[in-house]
Length: 169
Image (cartoon, rainbow, N blue to C red; front, side, top):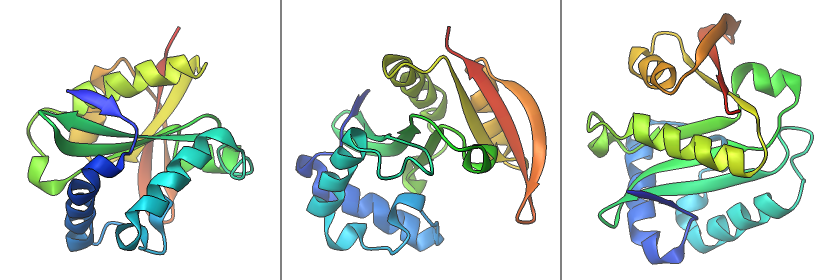
């Protein structure tokens, strides 16, 4: 099991992963217009650019995208944000991740968050905020299993959001 940067070598698997999200009607913040699967090479190029420049500095600064592979099979996608403005940090935090529906319930979540926390340390973060919907008990358990403490629960657009901090020092 390892984290990799998005790569064309896994284009077909990434397309299938996106299709699973489409089937669930999941909105991805990095693909609001739904065009990633129509032009995966451009999507991959954009993820590389987000690491180098700060076009999104008014949101969350540089963003790093990773894919999780297990036995050369694309399982998961992760976005790690270097910093965030307060209004975005309240809801979204530093780390966003999603697992394809066909791979849920196979115990990847705890490990992937741990691997992402190592990447957060590499880019110089001392602590990270990870959020989830309060009714998502599985995500809460994964976050807590990685050493998080619950700071608070906020109401955001009609949903209760649990806000967890993880100390990386």
